Amino acid sequence: MEKLTEEQIQERLKSFEGWDYHDDALHTVFEFENFKEAFSAMTRIAFEAERLGHHPEWSNVYNSLEIFLTTHDADGVTEKDFELAEIIDALIG
Image 1 (cartoon, rainbow, N blue to C red):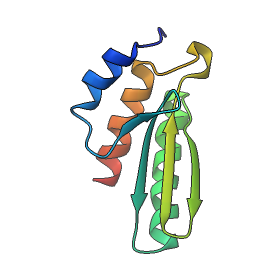
Image 2: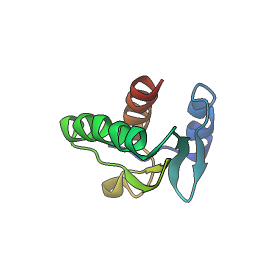
Image 3: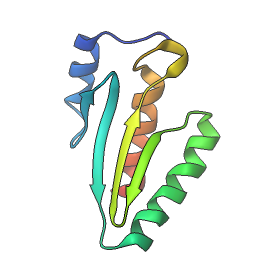
Image 4: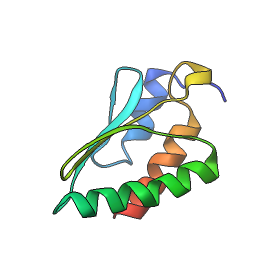
């Protein structure tokens, strides 16, 4: 995968509500009703990430899930990150 330029990333982000570009990664935070809902979302994302062979950097505190997507092999954001972001948005709604 080829690393995208910041200009390409910013252009692609226009169609992703709630995501930004931060520290060489796509970034978002989701808030849920409770821990169980947050953990359930993480589980659904984990299955898709495993299928893609592309895994998020994330952290969970109670009802909050913070996600960073970057492609370590490319040392930055690639199309693979946008593909996973799109899947995450579809899963979480």
